[in-house]
Image 1 (cartoon, rainbow, N blue to C red):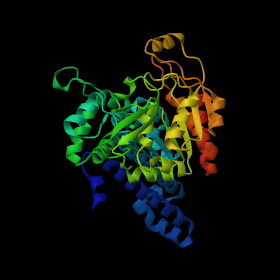
Image 2: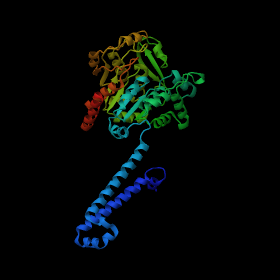
Image 3: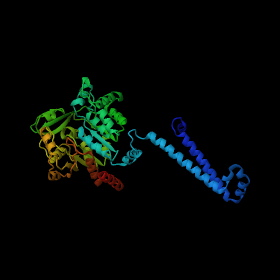
Length: 441
């Protein structure tokens, strides 16, 4: 029987179990003596024979003492047993047990959020969102054909693992340690340029019998909060048609042409999303597009058959997170309204709110990005609202030497938009309380 395992040597629990049992026995004995002393016939028996067994403890004051000793032994032994169990189960990084309980109980009741995109931008949002809910689904583009992902795709015929890896790391419980390991890139030899995380996913692809199974396996290894799903399991190639009619294939080739993009599409066109992705969208409280490259990270997902239609028909609040800077060769000269218009024209009505950075960017950062051909995205709020989309401007820039969204500020803004539409009033109150506490903290 499994209950007997508590008696195995080395668990440091048996001694406290026996002490608790002894304390309970002593307490029961004291209670029996005290009750018996209040009944006339029983009191006579105690006077005749009780002293032979209990001595001075056969009197009421002694019985009370027995009860107190027994209760104290039970409480002490239970506390020591609980301490042994807690120290065994506590995280190795020294986190308090309350953090584990918070993660597994409170966050499991958080809002259901689906995030769609790719690249590093998506992982930024995931790092912030996971502090408020475990019910996260990341739907990630598999159109990447450059760098380590492109090489593995060409050599092994697997789907590109790079963006998937970034999302897995962002949602991992032990994010900092695992990020250093999985993001490590070899700098010499035949593995030069490959990240260890990509190689692990490629190995799991063979061991588990498929890319989706590989991602699931990696999710279990990392104790990922939520789930990460490829947008499709088809080996797709991204194509772009420019305003001059020219067509280019390959995600890594698209920014190099230097013309305004009219639309993007996938080859083959009859690629379909995973059923889990459609189910997550149908049950979601919010669907968030981005942040990330407009034409090569966000829109490729919406080109998968049925995905955009599922988002448009969902009862979830639909949010687009606009980039802070333009992307050379992809969104040159584009305003926030141009970004929103591109999504609406390519994918239909899949946006209710557009989150836009509105605030100053340090001069040193602006100058550095200008040398690369990137400028801040202009927040033309009125143009966005003319398209039937509500603008949600805020200062979202993270401190540092690169222009990125602050994950905490961005997550709080997303969740405030969720609160406006969420049906469960108790969920609204508890979530708003948690957001406000994080802001004050």
